[in-house]
View 1 (cartoon, rainbow, N blue to C red):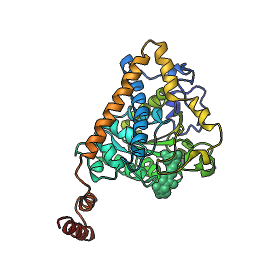
View 2: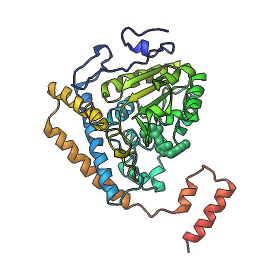
View 3: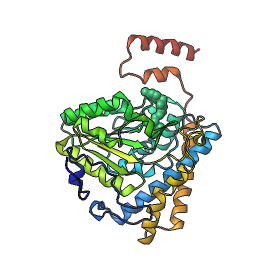
View 4: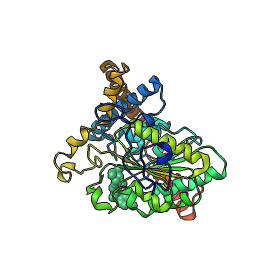
Length: 368
Ligand SMILES: Cc1ncc(C[n+]2csc(CCOP(=O)(O)OP(=O)(O)O)c2C)c(N)n1
Ligand SMILES: [Mg+2]
């Protein structure tokens, strides 16, 4: 076992390094605690990170309001996971293929998904899951963990095609207990396929706490059995998440195989807006504790001290998110009424016989 004396990128990406202590760059008081890992980012890029976190915090509020007005369908809140979601996706490029889970709409939107399509997906409309040919992503996965095997296969395809890109996928702490999770990381490891696997450990799989899901002290160490590097990172720290993900992407692209990243974060809200109440299962004080580690707060202090952030700018970004959500819901509501036949047609490139028969049955009804 190699013990990490200092956390360097090289040590973190060593598959024989079995030290999974949490990587941090920016602490909750907005101070840099590991200069060596500080990613090289311009002031503009730093500001962009903050703008995006503020945007999606407000977007989450808009989703809540629209859901309560009955204008959205399935909604999985994202507040508390901004650094985890954006720190990972901002280390990718449009050449990479994304396999998100149902909570990962912000990553898809950052990859270029039109905003109204995010709402159409929530409403269960087929147009929310139809993408342009050159948009390298799959619709959010509902079957927890299933995206890991898909990402492994896509990563192998990328390698065989000689492309300099990765497949990136996200699941939750709960997803990391699924068979698909282990199969995906094992397969990608065996083929040295360029995948970056992210576990967003937000502490809960609906009402099941992280501690009840596995005897493993960290989720990052699940990488050991697949023979690939595993890194646990402070998921409330966008600089640490970004630094680790960027290094993992380069490692994978250089032909070294996949990396598993566990981001420690929290979901402030309910599992979904369809009915669970976190007050009934989360221990008292947990929300307050995690809100004290908030990713926006610490980054706001950091940027304000550098003279790069103001309250006025924050208000502008919030207003912009409100405006864009308003436009996006209008566009989503203007979409043609959902047809079952369109859903069926979107299932396969070429429909099998049973699906084809169903398409015809539904078209006959719809055209009456
Ligand atoms: C294979 C499968 N089993 C069960 C479910 C029902 N289910 C939906 S979300 C969820 C919990 C997932 O928790 P986690 O992976 O931690 O992700 P989070 O929701 O916290 O982001 C469960 C059990 C499902 N969607 N798929
Ligand atoms: Mg979870």
